[in-house]
Length: 126
Image (tube, rainbow, N blue to C red):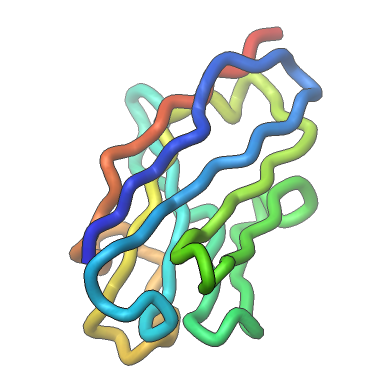
């Protein structure tokens, strides 16, 4: 499995941004994908995840009212729609997968995900 994240950039506070995570390799609908972010000087933080069957979604409390995760299996892509962005959302955003988990989301810890995209930087100006 290989992942490629994209969609980052510079946005103003209050704006929206959609990130994409394009997957290749193993059959896309056989594993779950998660989004994390890492701000300068902080640990990598779980944001959201979508189970392989698309019916089960997971969110951290910090973003559940502003971010939406969804997947398009036909495009082998998972998206993270981010609304009402604030300067504290400035970070490098990563998508990750655990192809060994049997398609379920079994962890919200970044250390438990063996496959990562390269990260995409989102900068929110005030």
